[in-house]
Amino acid sequence: MRKHLTRLIALSLALGASAANATYISETWHDQYHTKQLLNKKNSEAHWTFNIKRDGFRPGMDYVVYYGITLYVEDDEKKDKREIAIFDQPGKAGDVKFKVDMGPAFAGMSLRGFYKINSKGKLRVSLYRKKGDFWFNGASLWAKGFTKIPAPGTFALVVLGLLGLAARRKLNA
Image (cartoon, rainbow, N blue to C red; front, side, top):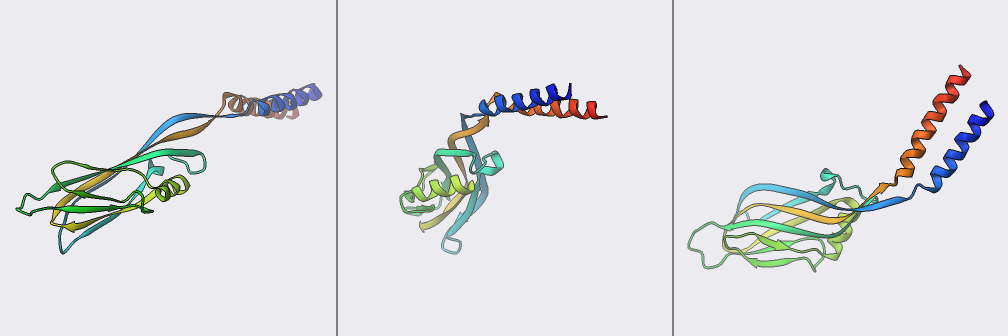
């Protein structure tokens, strides 16, 4: 009986291992930075780090294909002629210079930022006041990509292995 049980466990492990391929599914991760900060001559910059690991992103297991950033800025309603801000992220390609008005501003991705978010799950960014003064009310990042999930065969393999170990322990007792 013990020989047959050992052979059954070995066979189930071999069959389960051959069926243990990972599957990828589409996923979206988010992170937000909350603040209420007046950017002016005295306080002209803000720095923060987005961290999508807080939303379940696993570097090495998950893969971001594209990300976008929304900056929530608004005019302080003083009679300034123009308010201009510069958004900075790793690399030069994703930097954005924009006029501050009553709506949010959008920034795409940079190649270096793409690497950082995939390798660490984090992205360090900055917002600078170039001209005028305005309110910075926060920012949000969303990232679209794929997450790796084990195939059902992997779960079957684990369950069969545990059942086999339990049965063997019961026979030895």
